[in-house]
Length: 206
Image 1 (cartoon, rainbow, N blue to C red):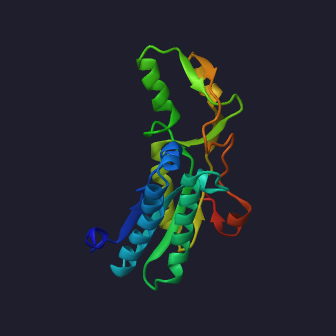
Image 2: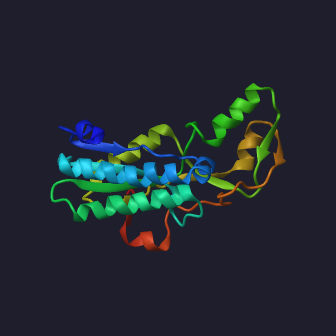
């Protein structure tokens, strides 16, 4: 009911609400499903009911070949948004998928900065080989507007973004590290596109 009120007289909507932390989702599976899957369907239903013109949902690299509940729930959300185009003659739905937004809440850089602020010079590192995709806040916003401009409905847009080794970030901060091992649900390397995505994935920059 709240979403029906919130989407009244709205032309464009960006769906960003989600439980986004791997460890939080692993510990709270029911809440993750309610928010990331059921919540996404509620957004879709409200947008269709109020004839919102274009809707873009933010996805994550963890939705590509997921091994944790966060990624699986976001993959389900992506599927819901793509399928929504079949159920609406007016509203169009698309997805934009990228990696970690640098300096955003929950990303590794603010966490390391917090530890440095506590005068800790030895930073935790899960694995020397671990890499992560990253994108700046401005680049993330740009990718959303590119998606709005180029979408017809039913696409997953994937901008070309960089990846770095987490150990290189620690070196750039002039700190030592301690190997703590991977947490439950973590990958060494994320992917942005899997085989099944390739038939409907578009590079948002091109």
